[in-house]
Length: 228
Image (tube, rainbow, N blue to C red; front, side, top):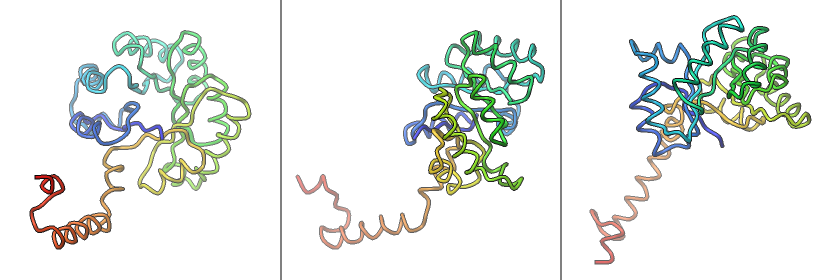
């Protein structure tokens, strides 16, 4: 499973890196806004330092015209390094920018995908990742799993290098559905991964094992004590 952290919360990233698989961090203006007043580039550079150069950092472009997108991408590339992925919305101007960016050797993540044709056009434009918005599609009465399955089939048949990075989740069930229907990767807040481990039944099982161990070997005894 390719997993990216969908957050700009530095303590959360630092805490989660040692527990969960992480190929990189994805951000957008809404995620940055949730962190309060932050200095844009210093904050992203702090994330870069934390995750290292082997992981990717995905940053949304703000300009809505091709030239503006190219200018922003150049600044991000220069400031954040080679492993930055510029997030480009799949609009007409975005598709134009993607082609220029890929010709220039940039890494591109295509965003704001709500349908099959959008995703296919982004693959055709050379995007490295395409990000269908799962929960948002469901809210619009669009079947995100059908979209993902179709794009996976078209991508495999057309031998496109782009990978499906499923995004916009509200629960673990949506994450699993995206992976089951062919998404190569997910981007998710670490707190949502943590929720998968928070089922009361899990802790009950652990507590039952502890009780049985203590009944057999004594309270306060652990495995290492038995070798002493």
